[in-house]
Image 1 (cartoon, one colour):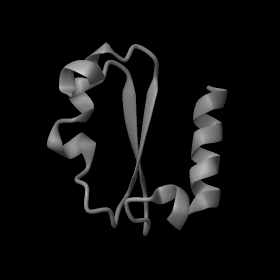
Image 2: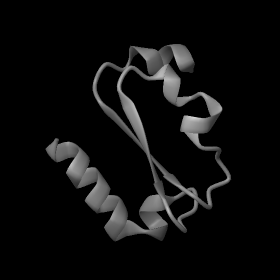
Image 3: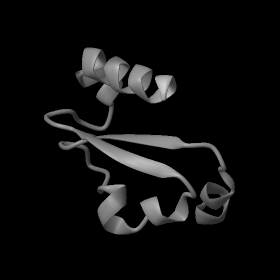
Image 4: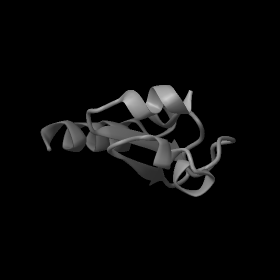
Length: 67
């Protein structure tokens, strides 16, 4: 999977809920596999950030796409 992630050449936004069962990509090394990515942690959200915090998720995605 890391090889595939390294092939992604466009900017990438990794959105993660702080209450998710999945670890933080910036702390577990997954972020380093991407060429141009950043992690945004959404406080209080679980693994499905778009479900738990839809307005914040949409704001983050819209801001990212506008860059």
